[in-house]
Image (cartoon, rainbow, N blue to C red; front, side):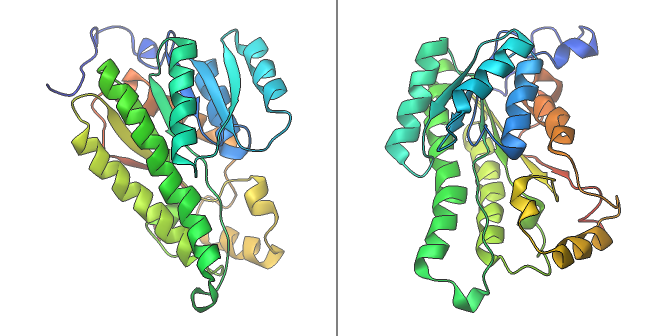
Length: 265
């Protein structure tokens, strides 16, 4: 069975970006990049399940997006580190909405330690969320997609997958994100008969994950980014909608880098 082909590719191009009638789930979807992605998919017409781990106001945030976009948006609590839990919640979402067309594996964390100083716990925690959690999410989604005969998986990776950031020391984070990119490539080939699999690799995004860093680090980054500024999380919305929609129907196994030119010099 070949890669899914749109039924009417001749229709006006704007229609290729519509997600009307689709159901999407976004892990880590209540803050930062994930929140912008959740909102973007809803604005494009999809019903959205926002997955979170601890944010107490997640249901009210989901309700606000639903009110503003006139689609169904619900919040579901799940830890991507727990294989059984993430599988159960994705299956519940598919049952509640009647289908699950798009899954964005976005949940992630970062820490910064000299490589020689990492404790086993620090290393394992990064890998547990960023790589293991991405795989558990993908595996659960893949089983649903295979049963349906179609699906679309998008990973949030990072430019850290393809370069070494400075001045911060984050070997574990970089390795975890490189693993995500390679995982996406592997799954895109294995699952080509029933799903597309792609990555978005953002550069430096203006979220609370960056706000905690020292000013000298941020000054260093600005000097290395040709764009001369950070990217707002809302500026990633188009990339995710593109990958989630039929506008990218022949695109699988790709890593879409959005970094203001940071990886180029």
